[in-house]
Image (cartoon, rainbow, N blue to C red; front, side, top):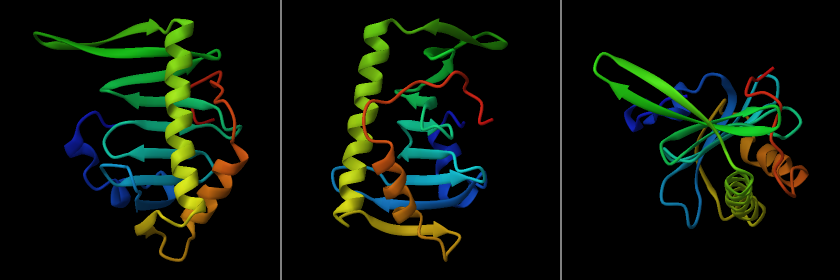
Length: 161
């Protein structure tokens, strides 16, 4: 996952791991939203540069990028990874979230995804690009979001497999 806006400027074109992807303008979202699916059906959501949510096949959150921090799933818990740069090296400092922090992050993610689901269902989100051209990524994502309604669970692992 890229950590700088310049690394994500053309996510629609460069996110080739998302074999089906679309860029949307969504009412209330300040930046374009890129949604997509990996070959194995795993869903990803990029709300501009930040936040980013990535899910496993069971619809569980496996990775997130929020407010400049990377979060990954470990045994059903979220772990924050903060980059700390010192002269000559960069370290990722690991911290497991407290219960309240994890709950707040998951509630905020669910609210954002629910707003997207409502926009897709109401056809108020506009597709501004997609790959491949013949895919209906917005409709597929709308179905995925409908099936994933409810609280977000945390995956056992951050890995796609």
